[in-house]
Image (cartoon, rainbow, N blue to C red; front, top):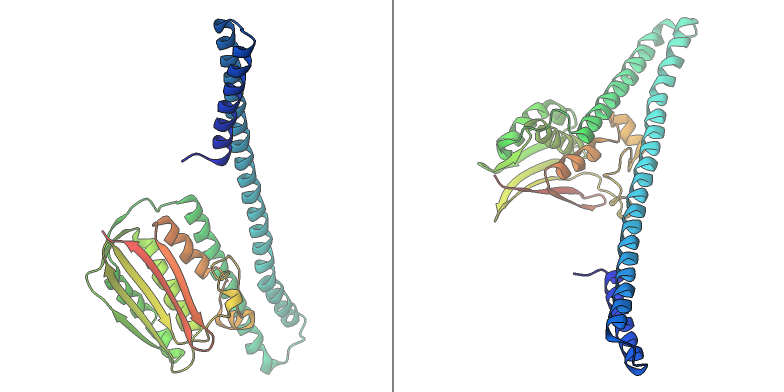
Length: 292
């Protein structure tokens, strides 16, 4: 397939060639001279077209670099802001304790606040480092055949206590569903999706993890009966640091990077990821991996 500029160039070359041939024929110009002049014109146009293609390619690469640089600056600004928030809180609580501004009975409360903010900052740093490793693909080269259904059950076991604390029931379905993947990344993929489904659920809610196969694809689906996502936010939930409900995210200890990590892992595995949600009824995230 030709691009628009290539088709236009071909048309111009043919048009000019025909015009020159008619002109030279009418003026009885020697055939050798006419052929030489037409060839020179054609070569000149072809060179111009190649130069345009190179300039266009360079401009596109420059635009990509500019976009990457812009994203890097935005990410750095977001990281600074996200780290500053818990640090400011920790500093404030510690200063009040140091200056004797807290009653004896309230000290446990302030100490717990410091502990919670420290845990939040540690989780944030861990997710940022994970994203960095995913960007650089550090220690992620090893791919092996993994039973996705078995790994899903292992992840459910790790999150069982948290699910019980939130009064959420976990269900898994599927067996012998092998995909070629990096074990560490796929384990993180399951953990983030199921963890999110628990955190943004309702008391008495459910999370269903279904692993199915259709032709050459293994479909991993995590569906919850939680609060759902507003239509205007569904295209943004995989962005770094984007939160639908900031107050709820802070209460649950969310870093705003969980789904961004999920999407990044899916991209590395050439998996397609989709999201369906209805406010008040729940959300379903489905990823289609290639079967091993």
